[in-house]
Length: 182
Image (cartoon, rainbow, N blue to C red):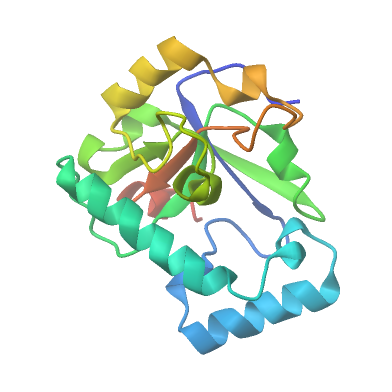
């Protein structure tokens, strides 16, 4: 079960591989090879991803980036690093030996961080009329949305009430992330 909100961001990763590894940072052929290896091993959540995952991911990341820029965001990267607002231990189960890094939200400049109410994929792709679909939020906006709906970690910890199980955070800059890589 996922926990309650605090103003910390959580990044979950495979202990063996290390934090903030991102398929989007690789050339397409290299990313496809990594995804194929994960699918062949079959031991992690990533092994269940579809064959068009990388193409869809690039499209969604581009859409999120453009929406964020439209709201005044100033990303320095073409693709984000991913975290969650508040803890969600369910994500640690995506890995054979899941680990986490916790970073205070206030360490990030507002122009470098966006939010989706749920994972980027279902947020941008589900067509169920919920107001937070196909939306990217600033820090102030996501905090207001939480006042309205609460945290998905609280009302949907098992995923029975829709695809949103956490608030995803997109980090569009490496400055703070680099401090946590050593």
